Picture 1 (tube, rainbow, N blue to C red):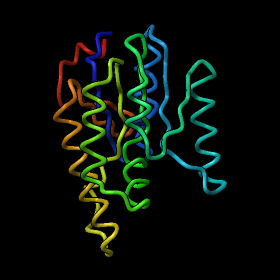
Picture 2: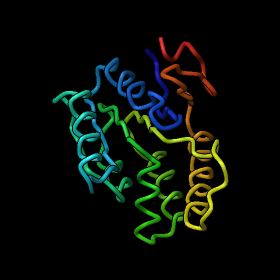
Picture 3: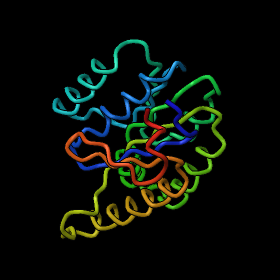
Length: 177
């Protein structure tokens, strides 16, 4: 497998994107680092986080970074493969913390470019649904769409996962073999 420095994996909710991204990491001989952006505010989310942890196994370094992903990326090394899961939860955390999403997204893109580790970022494609009925949801959808476009532009490989099936949108299919 010859993944580029930055791979972007996106798809809908429960599409299999996280499992696919984890499988890419398992194919690497590098030290695996998981940057977690989810926060466990209820039992359902705690169960989801626990299931993801069980699926990955114990040999990952896990960094909790609900809003400060840039610092987590700055401390990585060339011998690591980093899975950031996911950009969507990170962006919603930024928005709910009333931080400037444009500044935060610019900082994330700069941190990705400067990070010496190999990076895989998972994100949700949120633009396939109807126009949300409230201003906050529309603000989030628009910010997420802009972030996904920027991440895709910067990535060497972009994969859209639908029903567990990876579709290469950008890059060479031989990168996955």
